[in-house]
Image 1: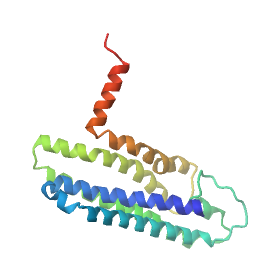
Image 2: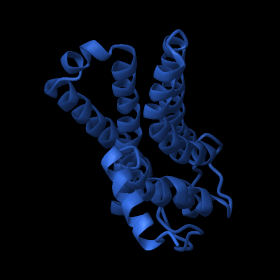
Image 3: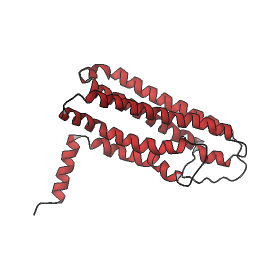
Image 4: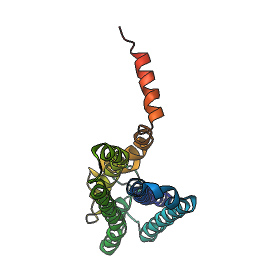
Length: 212
């Protein structure tokens, strides 16, 4: 139960933070002159607190849905961590209603936030279509790292949580993307947007492969 709670806590926080980050991108691209005023320290703190609160509520509801289930049979799951659907499969009672509640919780959270992200990027694209080609290129480059992380995180999560409460052997592979691969690549994806990081990598690369 602790593993279930912490996994969904940090997963929920990341989901909401990715949604908050697209608001930052929208302000930076569509209202650049007002960015410092809109995205002040108080606003950033509010976004972080809201993300943590949303993650806690999401995780707490998942915990409450499963902690009182009767487990009286097998105690092994076909997964590499204790997720909700594999645990429901071990329960000794009818879990149909709980499965629907899990879909309403995890599935809708993932789906609604993904739709909000897509609508936000649609607004960004609609705004920059009148800009010059150079500005459009810079704006799209600013969003590219965030879009990459969103795709790696949300597509596998939607595949698992937006369907009825069933488990497949492939779930372990898809779960790797939003629990390990996406968080692991986050620092690399975002630091590659940093010009100093790019220059340092070029120096290292050129030093290791000297010109003949």
